[in-house]
Length: 265
Image (cartoon, rainbow, N blue to C red; front, side, top):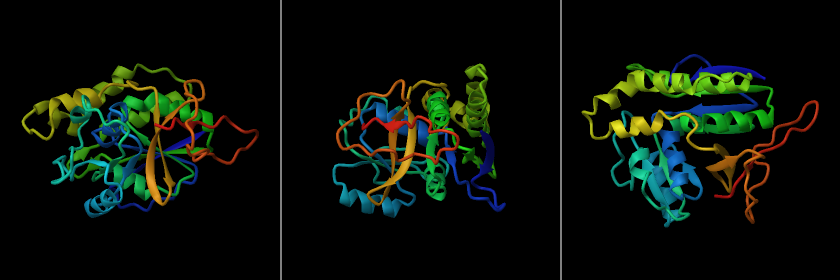
């Protein structure tokens, strides 16, 4: 299984990946998404623009909204910021969630045509690696979204390094990668705890490797990009009625690998 990296905010031409893509946003989009599922969210709808999010909310009046503009400030009129801490003790009771962020959601949209698409963060890193190993794509492309002109993006590079090591049969110490998240340029802004929109509590929640046993798969369903919780074949619960099947199936070569399924949450 080949792996490679691309950086969302670089101007270099990007060769389109055709197999599996993991769009990584540790601080904080896809950590927030994981905590949203734990809080009971139904399907998460990543929407690139604020105007598009409000349009979709009119179609889904029961939906809640979460997101932030570049730099981490919450979006006016949204229910929650892009903050796992805000969602940690919320009970969403199956409601759909619309997510708009400047990096992670933009990355998912940019690579939406990949055969298998994952939203990656450290809290779901091992589960993401497990899902990829079951799919056995020819290539996995990691999309680093956190590198900006004033940020090294090492929180996302660390997550990519960890998943990459797991894909190649290594068993590295996950704390090494969690420490890199905390010590990244953006991580240190949370540690400073001088911006109410970048609380130190969020960094603590984001820098926990393998906290959850599910991956976050993304696919177009009913005309919308959707994120669903995905468990490996070993951990998967009984399928829910009407769930989307085989949204991430890749063409097999030399046999048909087991295909993870959304758990219908």
